[in-house]
Length: 273
Image 1 (tube, rainbow, N blue to C red):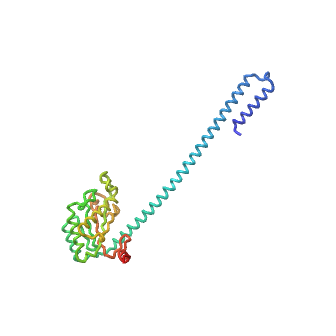
Image 2: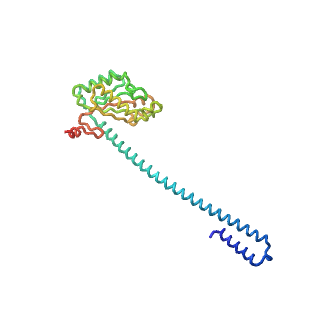
Image 3: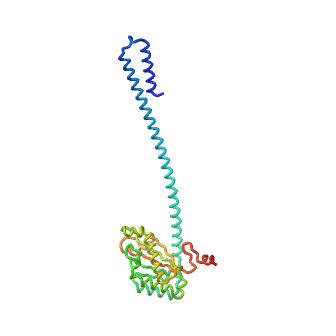
């Protein structure tokens, strides 16, 4: 029983006792005051009851919102776990691809090696490593800044590259085209509309090289494309010169039996027989 309820009972009992003992013993004003106090206490008691009901309703609403937040948090955590798992799988895939590329031996015949070396002398910005057979194109000779469209001035270079790969023993070899960017994020709105991130820019540039080589006669079944964004710089991105070195497209020459990104050409050929 609340304090206000007990007070109401006591005042009522006192008033009753006074009424029974006779009006001559207690002034009417005192009785009137007691009645007013009873009414005030009754009002206070009702207000407290209403306040308690409102508080209980607020607590119930809070508990409902808290349960909803917990449910949404569980969904968010589940999505985050899925994204982390996908990210790990993608990273492992690229690490595996990277390890394979590092361990590649140059499968090009000597005649093709010499032709690529001559090509490097002919076109500044194009480099060829005779030990690994890797061709490296500065992005600045292939593309304008923020673009994945091949410059018209780069068409002869890619045409000569395709021609060498279609001659002699080189015709049996495959290639993997890999795009790289510097560490600057995509800033121009017009560029972001086509390439939202450096991932998009690097892969789109690799795709453009593949498409151009295909137009120059290199079979699509012999080519693959990948992009590493700014994650594999050849030098630290400390200034414009170093960033220029990191913006590049690399072409790896692969033996016919080389398995890249989980694709086994031998197994694929056997499965069609």
